[in-house]
Amino acid sequence: MEGYIGPFICATALSALFTPLVRKLALTMVVLDQPGERKIHRQPVPLWGGLAIFLAFLFTAKIFAVGLAEFGGIVVAATVVTVLGLIDDVRPLSAAVKFCGQILAALVLVLMGTKIEFLTNPFGGMIYLGWWGVPLTILWVVSITNMVNLIDGLDGLAAGVAAIAGAALFVVAAGKGQTVMALLAAILTGSALGFLPYNFNPAKIFMGDTGSMFLGFILAAISVEGALKGAATIALTIPLLVLGVPFFDTLFAIVRRYREGRPIYKADRGHLHHRLLDMGFSQRTAVLLVYGLSISLAVAAVFLSKFDDFGSFIAVIWLGVFMFALGEVIDTSARGSKINTDA
Image (cartoon, rainbow, N blue to C red; front, side, top):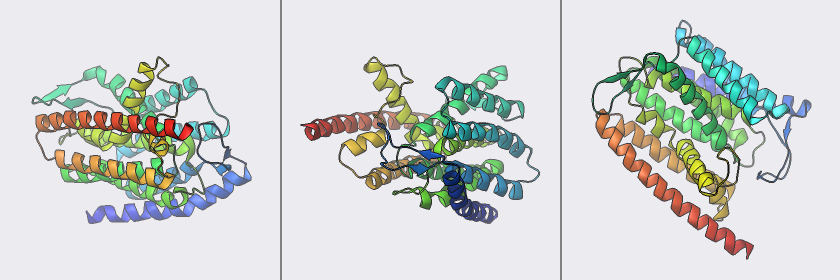
C-alpha cells in the first residue's frame, strides 16, 4: 500500500493547486455557468474546474506511471473527452455531437489496447468475447461517462461520488493484485478530493462537463483495464456496484421517463439529488446523504469482491431490488412534499 500513498498525495496537492488557477482563467475568459430553470445556483459560477482535475491526474500519472503501456492509451482517450467537455462548457454542444465525441474517445481507448476481452461468468469460468469486446467496451465507457455526467447537479456531488468510487476500485484492485488499476484509481481519487474543497457548497467553481465526463470516462477506463481483464478478473458486478449511485440513478431516470411517455434522453428534475431537495433537504444535507449511500455501496462492493462470482452476482441482484424499492420510496415522498409545498 505504501507505493500508492505518494501518487495519491501528489494528485490531491496538484488538484488543490490547479483549481484556483483554473478558476481565475475561467473568470478572465468569462466561462461561467449561468442560473437557469433546472439549476440550483442563483449566481454565475466559473466553469472548467474539470481542467484542474484532468491536469492533476495527467501530471501525477506521468510521474508515477512511466513505462505503463496502458497509461498512454487511457491518457490520449481521456484528453479527447476532456477537450470535448472544454468546448461544451464554452459553447454547449448538442447531445448528438457529445455522444459522437464520447464514442470517438472510447474508440481511441480501444484502438490503443484497452478493451474488455472476457467477462467472469457468475456460473463459473470465463466468457471470451472476441470482436464483441470492441462494441461492449465502447458501450461501457460511454454509459459510465454519461452516468457520472448526469449526477453532476449539486455542489460537490459528482466529485465526491467519483472519489468514493475511485477509493473502492483502489481497494478492490490492490487486493486482487491489479497494480495498474490500483495506481490510476488512487490518482483519480486524489485528483477529485483536491478539487472538492472548492466545489463543495457553496461552490466557488464548477467542474462542468469537462470534469464530469473526464471522471466518468476514467472510472470506466480503469475498470476495463483492471476489473474486466487480466488474470485476477473481477466480476462485472463489482464495478457496477462501486458506481451504484450513478448507475441506479440513470436506470431509474430511464424507467421514470418511459412511464411518463417522455423521451429517455430528455433531461428533467427527477434525479435522486433533485428528489432529496424536493423533500426539504438542503444542498449540503442532500449531498451528504448521497455520499452515505455511495459509501455503503462501495463497502458492499469491496466485501462482495471476496465472494465467489455466483455469490456476488446474487447479492448484487438483491441490492438492485433494494435500491429500486428505495428509489420508489424517495420518489413518492418527494412528490408528496412538493405537492404540499405548492399548496
